[in-house]
Image 1 (cartoon, rainbow, N blue to C red):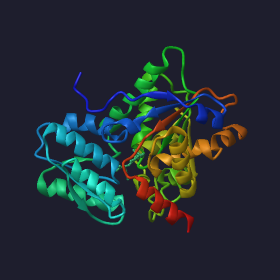
Image 2: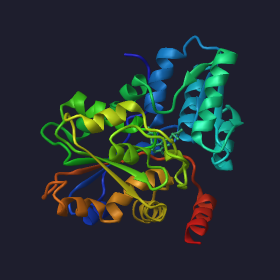
Image 3: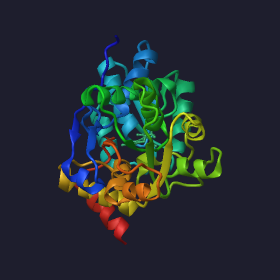
Length: 322
Ligand code: PLV
């Protein structure tokens, strides 16, 4: 088997989250990956396949795909250019540069940065690393579910899985993983923030739609269009996907509660998923009969994220309170 760049992350039982939800809750701690998020699983796998002989990689990112690409490229001895929109905080730019990447800031949102990354790939002959829309990414991300199955041991399976959705790469990877381990009856709760809700918009419209703008502060969920594969899964009967949104305030509140209760700091993109627990959404879904009661163990993918520090947290608090 090829060498990989990600680590096998801990699966932790959270007593406080279990209390909130009313069922045993497990946290898959993807925040503890070397690049700070789950992205390294897919991007490591993709680069392993496509970038070995590359003269350089170029990745468009809200931040975390870029962190993964920069880390993997450094380990492979390949130069990395990361294109981010101006909405990515300065602390991310600094962290990318610390990983040895060249950072280019282009446009207002991820879609603008992506157009520039595609142009650079073409004109400079660089290997394009997409942040969420590629089968190799989904295959790489799927390893997190295989690990969960190993950690839980034979005979134990989750009652539901909770994930955040940006462009839908994590969702596709989790579904791929559920299929790989034979857990297709496990429903997936797909969370976004209002204003970065391209998956929810597509599910509601019954077709892939492009949001006019990204108005959420969860910039790492800020793709205007969800990948087609994620939408197709939502239309298929193979798996149940429940698409829900929370407000930025709820996502930020979740980041703070998670910090208090689990002593781990994650970014808003991850807070969107955590908010499903703290805001009572899981219990509401049970009351509505969309999730079973009693519910088997809840598996929360703690996707992580590097776009946060105490100053960023304080700035967001200030911004979202006014
Ligand atoms: N972030 C992508 C896309 O941004 C990026 O470039 O980093 N949780 C975290 C911490 C993330 O960074 C992301 C994606 C997601 C969840 C959602 O993953 P996705 O895009 O595969 O659905 C625009």
